[in-house]
Length: 366
Image (cartoon, rainbow, N blue to C red; front, side, top):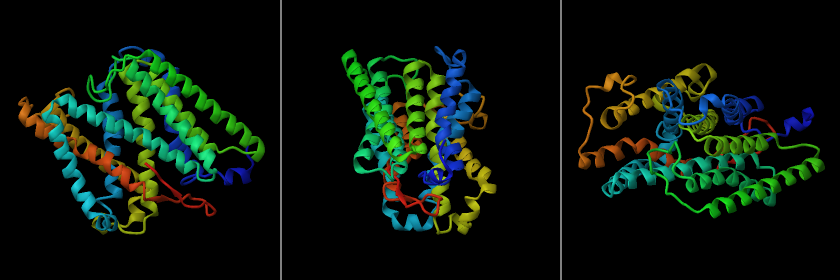
């Protein structure tokens, strides 16, 4: 057990309770739940409409829109980077149109790999936040460990296609039928994580303490990615572990940084109120409404696979003309693609200050 003094030195981003509940616990808890109920997640278990509503719409798509709070809804931030925030949505739409003109798969494949990059880099960003007190060598090994935890399952996925789940659409990942590549990746995976463990044992013995949030982050990341991609071969298991482990911590980080900004929010509403505990349902509810509207257009115009949820949009025609889809599909994907691109800017230069009065500012790297 850590002493009170040792716990106080933990590099929490906001606070021990907040970090544990909203950043570190989601990946661990959802993975343990999947492992505890394999009968619910094994095999070709489809994502039910209710599970899709909760996981995809309320968490995955909603977290995409949370970027608005840190960019377009922040007057000072928008004025400072007006050109970036104006041009990126236009750029990603035009790029999407060009890609779609080469075929729908070219568009979805590019978007899938952009999403994968975004998901991997988020875990690396959190690792950097929790490694602020480590020396350069330790930080490099920490980075290698978080990359191993995310990249090996991806290599396994690519070398074991087809799977009973996909990132966006069937065939969006390139098949790599080289069993040797997966074997090499697994050896590297075990070696890097073993070195990390040895480093933690050594440092823990010398300091008589461990970095609790950093280790919980790595354990949660490694478990959720391995279980969701390698252990189980089903859409529901992958969606649950993938979405919750990624979306909830991102929402939490937006909320943390929102509270620490001094400028007012949209329409002059006080930031302290918008990011207050009492307003949390409104903070999330607004994002869910935006996600519902976007997914309603997707379902009516393109997919037609959740008509029972999006009856309000049933008056819209399903598009079948390839030329029209080449403009509409990239347009509908603008919020998502903009989120991926802007995420590489807003965290790279932003700072998240730990709640502890003695904590030094730490740099977020998305």
